[in-house]
Image (cartoon, rainbow, N blue to C red; front, side, top):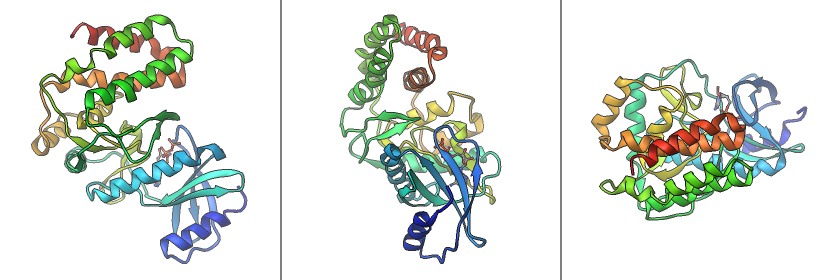
Length: 291
Ligand code: ADP
């Protein structure tokens, strides 16, 4: 991209800063988009670009970042806007110098506070994406039904469209019919969730404050965020102890964790192919064995 003028103009309008000519340096680490640090010699910004059909994805990301800001709980980049630059869609936000892992206790306290930011219905103001897969967020007061239809059911249908074998779809649907079983004695709150909280979407700023970014926000069971944090590693016992002090974790989490992570493994199978298929099938079998 040689001319960042539309981004510069948006930053002038939205940030109130005197933004000069911007120079871009690529930032690595993302899964989906091209990312750059923009610099005018005085200020830094973070911009992601993708094809024009991804503009709505960026708009949904911005709404999610704004929602996290509204909860006044944990640091997330302040988003300035989205639009088109050249032939590319973009989102531009505050640049945060990320340095290492967040302190587990601080992360737990701030995340528990975000999860204490609740509303009366599950879902979100907009649909968004998980990875690059659409994520449906229609409002509902029935969490088990929400998870059944808008999370597992959606991914299972996608897996069938993608031509994965019938066993996955058939056993998956058998499990999906039993989702309410996992909520027979547990009624979650509709908490503000990050939605995609693997370790690659968390860090610490230069003062050591936890930062979360690249969200796929919606209001749902706080356990879904905790489960994702354990999917590819673990935030550790100190995290869970500190979290539990502020937002007690129900004993049934140990079983529901797999139900929640099945959504992400199905999504990985749909995005990245059959290597995740056997893991999805094992998870389905183990969950079916518990109903
Ligand atoms: P993608 O949407 O492609 O997955 P990310 O939003 O995860 O991209 O961003 C890519 C990388 O850029 C992250 O892994 C992180 O290291 C860094 N990053 C993300 N947001 C910011 C930000 N606001 N400021 C500075 N660096 C960021």
